[in-house]
Length: 446
Ligand SMILES: [Zn+2]
Image 1 (cartoon, rainbow, N blue to C red):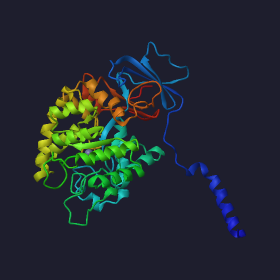
Image 2: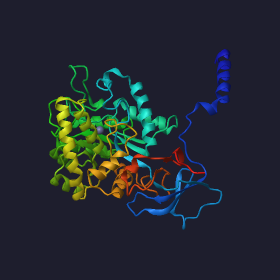
Image 3: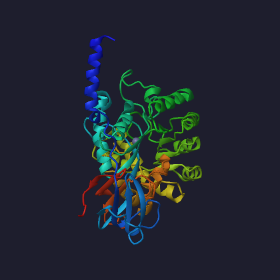
Image 4: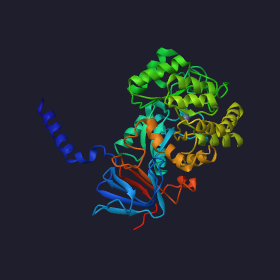
């Protein structure tokens, strides 16, 4: 090596060593030491009765013990945080988000895919992710993002650069050419899709699309089994899109890689086709009928009702933000959603909470608990299980999150008062802990 180059490299090395502790990723915040959380109530997420005067003992990033204050031993030297007349619960899980980009109703949202750089959309995603975490949602299942921006956000959160929930992302949602998961309404050539960005027709392309999403980090696969409310085009909201053969190939291909598939499906027929093909969950399920519900229950297929999306698009249709066919579809779907959750519950379909945030404002996710009770007739306790344990089961991560249980990650939230007597309390999260690190403590007592 030339001596000058060698000397130069040597200087670079010395400088690099001097600042080494400042140049790497900060690492995601984690708790350290023993922290004891006390509150008037603990709802552990299993569906069991609330524990009065409960405590949760946290060591570093894990839960060590949960129970009534009278029986759980508080380790000496522990930091005690008494939340008073609050209710402690597991961190909430939103099973249906679109964390990247602008929200529906943003006047700039219409052509965002063609005007906004990916870096811009991802930056908005960082803001959305922080709002979601502060609303008590410590985990999300993100069902569709452009250009693997969901993977970028996930990495930035996991490396500790920005605060946000645990992200399980789908990459691009898979759909047929011209279908609900495609970008429609533009002249030919402007928004042509291919398997890389999720537009795939026929069994072979579908397999390629699944493999491509997984190659770049997809934790699960999202597909559009039927038409939708917000897509441009003439299809009625419930029209079937993928065939059984295509959906079956998708499920098989994903399964080989240990991934689940979830299907956006409004229409009764599309719900049944997707369920028979073996998807893990149905998103929206607006026009679910008795036969479909029985089929879902028999297959263990979850329903993610996204009632907030129904309420949100209904509001936008009524105030003329949505017009024409999109408004008509919105009103039809929202009306149907008021019955579909009841049909699902009556037939013992498993329910996981999902908001479709992005269609609704990020950070307002807790309102879904309220709608599950008010529209769907769920008990508040069942709604809480849908937004905690069932979300974890649907993701396949119930051994590490989803309930307040010894050994699980310390993802813990609190609301003032009792959500079992007033479900709206779920919309006012005042304490957020993720991995044992406290992100919000609005009403801490000395
Ligand atoms: Zn969605």
